[in-house]
Amino acid sequence: MEMRNATCGYDGKPVVKKATFSVSEGEVLCLLGPNGSGKTTLFKTILGLLKLQNGEILLDGVDTRTWPRRKIAQVIGYVPQAHAPTFPFDVVDMVLMGRTAHLGTFATPSEEDKRIALEAIEKLGISYLKDRVYTEISGGERQLVLIARALAQQPRILVMDEPTTSLDFGNQMLVLKHIEYLSNLNIGVVMSSHFPNHAFSCASKVMLLNKGVVFGLGSPEETVTEENLKKLYGVDVKIITASIGNGQQARVCVPVTKRAAMESFTDAKSAACYG
Amino acid sequence: MSIAKEIKTTSASSVRWKWIILVALPVAAFLLSFPLGRYPVSLEQLITVLAAKVFPIAHTWPSTIDTVIFKVRLPRIIAAMLVGAALATSGAAYQGMFKNPLVSPDILGASAGAGFGAALAIFFSYSYFGIQIFSFLFGLAAVMLAWAVSSRIKHDPMLALVLSGILIGTLFTSGTSLLKYMADPYDKLPAITYWLMGSLASIDNKDVMAAGIPILIGAIPLFLIRWRLNVLSLGEEEATALGLDTKKLRLLVIVCSTLMTSASVSISGLIGWVGLVVPHLARMAVGPNYCILLPASILMGSSYLLLVDDLARLMASVEIPLGILTSIIGAPFFIILLMRSRRGWS
Image 1: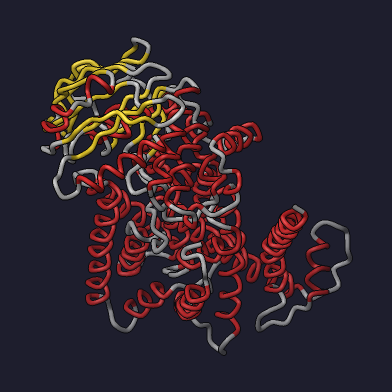
Image 2: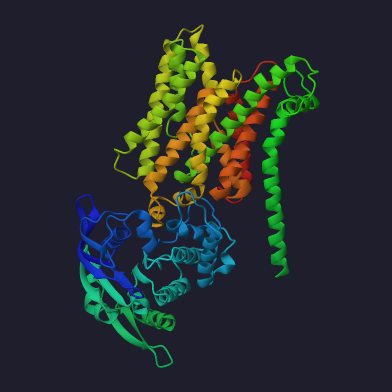
């Protein structure tokens, strides 16, 4: 998927200006940017929920702007932030809804669709949840169910809006692990995050977005630098390399504050253990 | 493992029992409702008379029984079931579409419009048939108006719809009040008031046909797209991202529900609470999945209104307006359900 010179926003009010980037299958693109920088607007435009104001969105070189909803959803999946719907659906039914784009208007899911949904549930290791009620499981579990639903949609590109926000530390790492797994399935992932460390642990590409303008795009090592994070968030940080055993190394970003210096160092170490 | 298996099988058999009860309910209510009434017809007589329609049986009973069964009770029973099923179905569909379990089928002004149409027809001394036509058309018109207004509001489309529905409904209700104020207090005012209370007392076979056709036309598409109602209930953005054309589906749901509600109201008058209470009952019985929730709503809605209408016929020496009874029974019933339910809106 490719965006060229894309301007996104609402009726004549551009939020994101002239964004150009691409994601191919198996790549993980992580968007970093402060609140209000246009991450969500950009995502809504990729998903076709907002009309592209200017520029192009291409899939395999074909402009998707005239595509019907169903066709877009067959290629691009969406994992929203975990939330509670109005009605207490069973987890299986929730995942089955991922099949919408593959079903005719008057069709109900077939045995084959059910098989695909159960397979997606199994792939995420949450088979124990399948007969539970979606509104009664934890936030972390819900996020995994939503990822399973997106898998059942069988997309080539997956858009994830802050998939780790509001999850506890263990669940954040679990979701990151699954994102890596998605890329191994040859799905291209576009995600946003508020944690630079998450970009280090799962992204193959990072895009920095500030006030709607792209000001950095490239590998995590080149893009997530001390200088760029200072510009982005106004926070002094140190990027350090930690050894995580077995001769492996991981980059971590540590905020520089005199008082919290000790604490963030331990945080960084534990993050590195999981990352 | 074995415990898990046991739970699985017991839940499967309890599901089967649930469905047997759900299907038996309207059948039992249907058969039970024939013998009830001021003119006594025994169950035996009923079966003989019904069987005589198919088999050559000697006509040994008074012809009054034929009249009572086929001209009085049958149309009324069918009408009660049709209206109950229609209101429950459109209520269930609206609750999903508006993502709100407190929505009833008249949220977009269908009942208010239909009430105004009927009042207008009574005011102009039109025939009974004229009242039906007016109420049906004004019910449709009110919703169309609400839709047109909402499409010009640039906000969340669902919120815009609800707001314009309430506004248009208020306009039509005020219109009805104005007509009542101007109407002849000895003749037309009581007629309007009684009509608004809702009743199935003067139903005949022609009315059943006239309302049955639009109700079926509305019910069939809703039934076919029922799985998609699940997806629609997730909300505009998520449903769209999953590949649903929400705009088209919403319009279809509104058109179908409005057809059903307006047709129902046109023969029964205003009957509240059925479209709100029955989908809840159904959700408690079979869960929120529309694949099974919609058929369950149809079965339960038809049984519920038929039984309440039986009460309306029998409770007192004069008929009690059906619309009053559905509220008197519906509201406390709903309160008890809410207090007893553990799963929130399930």
